[in-house]
Image 1 (cartoon, rainbow, N blue to C red):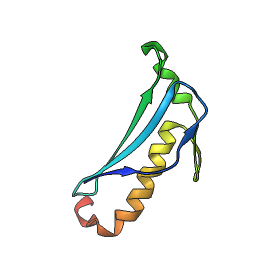
Image 2: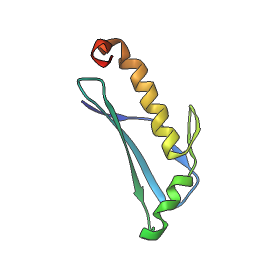
Image 3: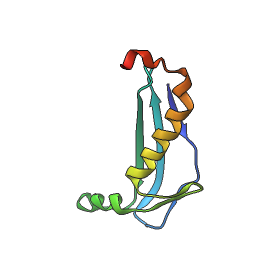
Image 4: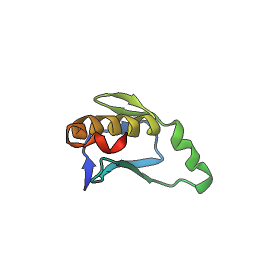
Length: 89
C-alpha cells in the first residue's frame, strides 16, 4: 500500500518548490518512506545543500532525514498492533 502524507510543510529556501512525502507499507510491516523534492533553477552541484534545509511543520522543525524518521515512527506506531511480531524473534 502506498499513501501520501498530507501535511503543511514550509521551508525558507528559494531552490525548493515542493516536498512530497510518500510511505509504502508492506504486508510484513516494513515501511519505506520517499521524500520527493521539486527543485527550481538549481544546478546539479548545489543539490547537496538540501540536507541542511530546515522544514517547518505543525510537529516542529526538521531536516529531511529527521522528517522522514519522524513519519516512519508515527506510521509504525499506528500499524504496530496489526503486525505479528512472532515472526521477528
